[in-house]
Each structure stands twice: as structure tokens, then as C-alpha cells.
Image (cartoon, rainbow, N blue to C red):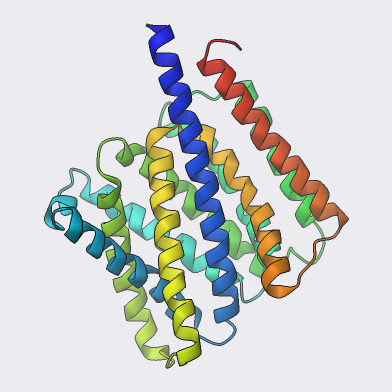
Length: 298
């Protein structure tokens, strides 16, 4: 039995990790676009664009797949509502932070989320919390601390925003893991998009600013990138244990550095590069150990 199931588990773990990495690429690309827009538009208007774009795309996909009504059927309406609220909090707090601190700094501070997810998965989902996972997560956190260098300019009141986003994201990830294995990813997508669109619209109306024609493609791009990233996240947490794939969210700091250089001309210093290398090493260590463990080689 072990010989049959172990490769399948290893395959699902690898797929979950790859989906997490792809989601991280898409999310950080979206964050780079957002950082450019929040200098000219109210943050809540940009948040609305992110969720409205997802809402439209999901509706179109569901229409092709057989209709919206099947995706609305759920046994967990309260969990979906809570999950949608947490996702809205994640995007709102992180987007707001981008108007105060750099993209790489915000991402590094938000990178406490894998630790919260790993601990939460053990406490609330009954997932195993072995010493290797703990070591990998802690090592990745050390890398993030090297990047942000406690006691320096990153730790301003605005630094609480991405930390709050990390807390919301951890709750969102745990609920996704709980619900995702039992329901379609599109169910989570449509409820999250509808909640975010409605909530952001109510708050956007008083501060709405006309969108310049040159910026319209960027607002559309936010919806596309956010939807793709969200779908990857939901599927990642559905096919693999949350505490396994969560550490790979640390790769976000690497992609944030990349987008910072390409889009804003922000080059990282030596400590940032060292911290990034530690994060990558920690993620690869967890992946290597989990692959061996599922194949019975650990």
C-alpha cells in the first residue's frame, strides 16, 4: 500500500509547491503594479479593481464551464464568508502598506505568514509539525529578518500593515485548506471575488477618482494577475498540506526584489541578498526532506 500511495503523495506535494511558487510570482507582479498605482489613486479604488477583475473573470470562466449556480452551492457558507473577509483584509492591508514602504520591505514583513500557517495547521487542522518543518520555517524566517534588519527604518508604524496582512493571510490559507479539499476552487473564488468587490465598492464611492486612459490597462492587469494567483493558491492548499507549501511563500521576497529592480530601479543591498539566499535554501530544504519522507527515504 505504501509503495502505491507514496509516489502519489509526493506528486501532490510537488504540484502544491509549484502552484505556490507560481502564485508568488503572480502576486508580486500584481503588487508591483499596485505600488505604481497607489501613488496616483486611492488605495481602496485599486483594491476594488483587484476584486472586480477577479469577479468578472470568474463569472466568464464559470459561464463556459456550465454556469454560475453550481459553483455557488456550498456546505460551508460561514467559512466562505470568513475566508473572503480575510482575503479582503490581506489585500487591503498590504496594498495600503505599499504607499508607505518599499515593495521588498513590505514583502519581507508579510513573510511571517508561513510560520503562522505552519503553526495554525498543527493546531487547527491536525497536520504533523515535525522538527524538519520547524527547522525549515525558522531558517526562512531568519532570512527574512536579515533582509528587514530589526531596529532600522523598516520598523515604522506602517510596518504593522503587512504584518496584519500576514495574519489575515494565514487565516485565509487555513480555511482554504479546510474547505478546498471538499469543494471546487471556483466556489472559493466566486465568493471571495463577490465579497471583495462589494466591500471595496462601498468604500470606494466617496473617494472615487476617474481613471486615466493610460492607466486602464494597469487596472485590468491587476484583476488578471490577482485571479491567476488566487487560483494557484487555492489549488496549492487543496492538493498539499498547508504547512508543507507555506514556506515557499518566502520566495516572494526574491520576486519582490526582482520587480523592485525592473519596475522601480530599487537595487537590494548585501544583507538583502544574503537573507534572500537563506530563504531559498530553507525552502529547498523543506521540499527535499518532504519528498524523501513521502517516499519512505527519510
